Length: 127
Image (cartoon, rainbow, N blue to C red; front, side, top):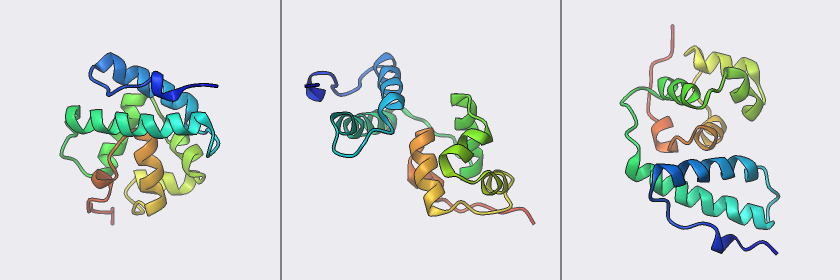
């Protein structure tokens, strides 16, 4: 049996952070109740704690923040659409034609490692 506790500790370096992100990508779709799901939950806690201390998120609106993080991770709008499930809606949101939904905030927060609190800020939609 896989022992999650022996593998992960508090993330203290950029190298450990990158390793944690890479592992998270491998286990993020694990089945609830599995050992990998428990590991995923642990990784989320450690990654979030590290990001909270070490991330300097720019003071921009939520859509610009999403675009910045997409660029950081090499994602395209199609990657967000695959996560959310609707290409048209994602396009409208990224072009300021539609506001982020709560579901989008949850999914994009997880996918792009952006605190949900940064995505709920008010921003101006295009006319």
